[in-house]
Image 1: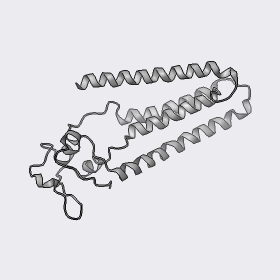
Image 2: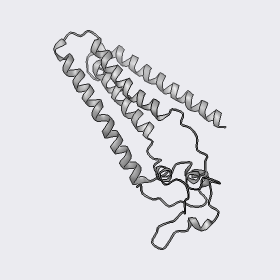
Image 3: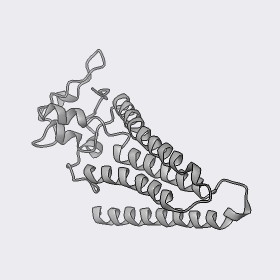
Image 4: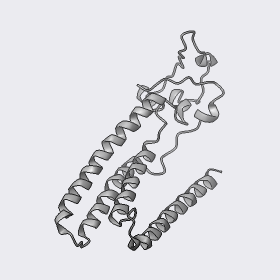
Length: 196
């Protein structure tokens, strides 16, 4: 069970929102998280190289790296979720599904021992999941995946080496990063306009 954070009656602006569907459902996140790094590794595997003797060791090490990355990221994310216990934005509707607010305001009362009994009547598992908002699992897995892809491609293109041959590659990599960031800002601006 996550840490039970105290919730106050005037926090409906934080936790009293209706439940909405994810922009990217969890099943698609798993496809992205698995396919993007695997495709990147296989792409560099089929590109011809001067030293063929390290090709098989490289693909083995890269695949071992991502298979270690996913469980490690999941464990760390869940440990932080359980330690922080931040409620989700729809927590009130998880706790009191009918109206999203308790009929009796004594539910917000803090007892002398520092505990609080919200008298939630929603589904118990849904309420427990409602206390696991931070950090986002979607964000942490995306960050871990694309961080791995960034460093893997950087290593293959010798981006961090001192040779002058990699200057063009550095510029291209920076441009691709900028394009990705601009695309993210465009999506965020569009989502903000839709919500307004």
